[in-house]
Image (cartoon, rainbow, N blue to C red; front, side, top):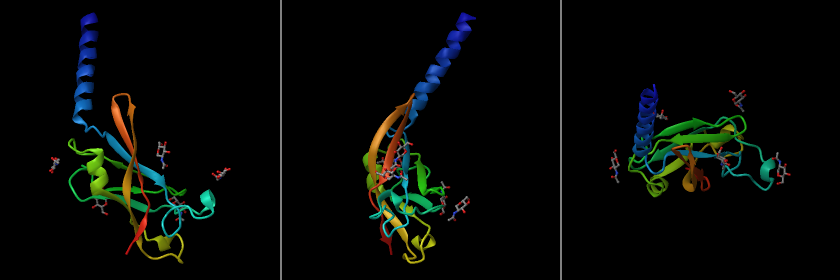
Length: 150
Ligand SMILES: *[C@@H]1O[C@H](CO)[C@@H](O)[C@H](O)[C@H]1NC(C)=O
Ligand SMILES: *[C@@H]1O[C@H](CO)[C@@H](O)[C@H](O)[C@H]1NC(C)=O
Ligand SMILES: *[C@@H]1O[C@H](CO)[C@@H](O)[C@H](O)[C@H]1NC(C)=O
Ligand SMILES: *[C@@H]1O[C@H](CO)[C@@H](O)[C@H](O)[C@H]1NC(C)=O
Ligand SMILES: *[C@@H]1O[C@H](CO)[C@@H](O)[C@H](O)[C@H]1NC(C)=O
């Protein structure tokens, strides 16, 4: 009985270690934030009272093969909050993701306010931090700042 318990424990330990080694040093990436209904998707002079941009479709696309699930899509909530989850290639680094991937707001800005341009937004990514949840790595990134994609 003791041996069986030990073998199960050993098996779990090996699976855990293999899994931890199979993922890239970046782990899973979450690109998250809140989208506002302004010309640059950021809160305006009204600060956090600015209207949000609800239900927008977002996408992270990369110019090199650094993310396994690219292009990765997500839909913002009614409160404008979004989270795009990226699964980096094992050889990807924070730098290679930041330099190759960009976050797009595919839904035209005019959807939230018809006075705004009927264009999408694009932003580069910025690394925030990597955290450990048990043996899993989770890297947070945010949009640097959106510009109109004309
Ligand atoms: C992204 O999500 C994390 C965890 O939920 C949170 O701590 C962080 O504040 C979020 N970042 C932004 C810009 O919303
Ligand atoms: C907006 O920010 C102010 C000051 O930072 C804070 O007192 C207020 O609770 C915030 N409002 C919301 C809705 O988050
Ligand atoms: C994201 O959407 C695009 C079309 O806009 C699609 O080609 C792609 O497969 C989607 N990505 C995922 C991971 O589903
Ligand atoms: C956003 O989506 C929610 C849930 O699907 C819906 O109830 C709400 O009316 C939508 N808001 C807008 C502005 O389209
Ligand atoms: C990383 O791996 C992918 C495929 O798994 C490959 O296309 C890419 O060239 C590799 N990048 C580097 C820098 O080795």
